[in-house]
Length: 171
Image (cartoon, rainbow, N blue to C red; front, side):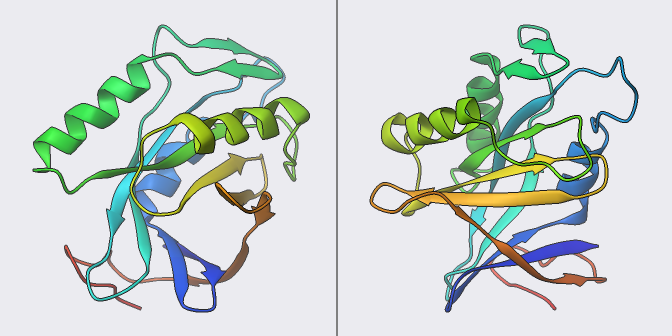
C-alpha cells in the first residue's frame, strides 16, 4: 500500500509500500525500544512534479539511539550516496525520517532544528525536503523549503497497487 500526500496543488509525495514497511519495522511498540531513523531516497518523476520515496536507510551501528532521542550518523549519507551511484544518479536524497514512542507523533524542538539545518545545509534536488515521524499508530509527514515554514502534509489517500515503474506514477 502506497501512502500519498498533497504537497502543493500540483505536487504529491508518494511513499511506496516497501519504504513504509522499512520505517514501520522500527516503530517503538515496547517500552525498551529505542528511536531509530534514516534518510529518504527516491525520485522526482519525469513529466510530473510528484516525488516518490522508494527506499529509506535504516539504523546504522554508529547512530546514537535512546528511548526519546536519536542522532543520525554520517553512514546514512554514505548509504544514500552509494544508492545514487548504483541507480546511475537517479536515486535522490529526499529527507529524513525517525520514530517516536507515542501513538500520534509530533516534532520536538530538536526535530525542528534538525530539519531547519538539513534544509539549509544539505545538498538535494528540488526545493524541499520531507520529514516523516513514525509513531506506534500512524506516520505523520512534514516538509520544509528554504523560504517557507515547516508544514505538515495531509495524507490524501492510500493506494493499493504496485509501485510505479521508473518515470511514471500509478494510482
